[in-house]
Length: 351
Ligand SMILES: [Zn+2]
Image (tube, rainbow, N blue to C red; front, side, top):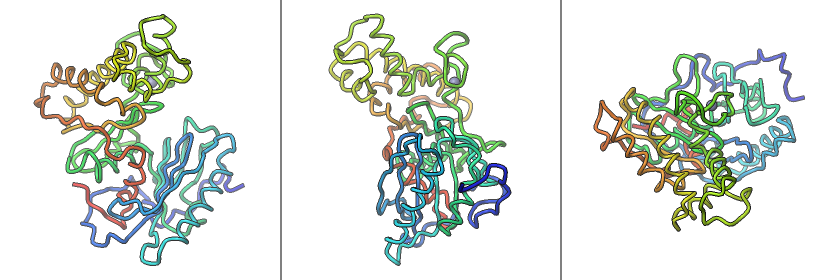
């Protein structure tokens, strides 16, 4: 056993903050040869790489997560891969820390993954100390969407903005919020649960969180596919003749471009739902823009018009037209690219 759930009183990794989440503003990068090991753990695969302080990925590869193997075997494989990666780095680029993005809730003060809802068995894992002992580097843990947001903010579509929301349309709808030039954690080091904001007072599909009518039942990749399955069951008009189980947002995007009424209607509905939620957030916080990423964001060209229309109707405190709606620039590399910005010692500045 790599760890015991009853014994979580381990030593902190050198680089892990002992109180509160890390801050991200710092001095300018003076040495772009500084690197870190970066890991992005997802439900289906793990991306890992060696990343320079300025966000350039020097080398990277993927591993299958294969959740059925359980966390212990996956973590052991990950450790072996990270050791190989570090050993292969040229002397001038040896990594100075390890940053890990995880799809769940993290106790950053104690360096523990509390729970990854979509990964069975991944709960109460003292990942920071495990990795610190195995890799002998300071270890930083972060929610994967927050790491994605750091990547897009510091090196991608959100560059130069001080107040920004980054959302991902994937299995759910994730969010990372940049307020006044800092990644925002609130008082509870929580993630931004934008996916569970309701889009109606009553009704709607049941969400994974147990409530009904959450944003992600309509605007996540999973939600869009669910809507498509309903559309097909009701025998509404569509040009799609394939197996419903094969439908993906990418296929729907291609269909929409050819005028398919099903795909166009679903993207319109998703765009409107995003508009309703984002208008409230913009009115509340006065953000400069939103970066939209994740698997379903490829259809940005169809999501944007209804989203912009709702913003124009509902934004009160700032000019809706000046709010930037930005497609992700870094795609599934964003979390790796953002990893150095989590690490105080590398101290990159983002705005
Ligand atoms: Zn929900």
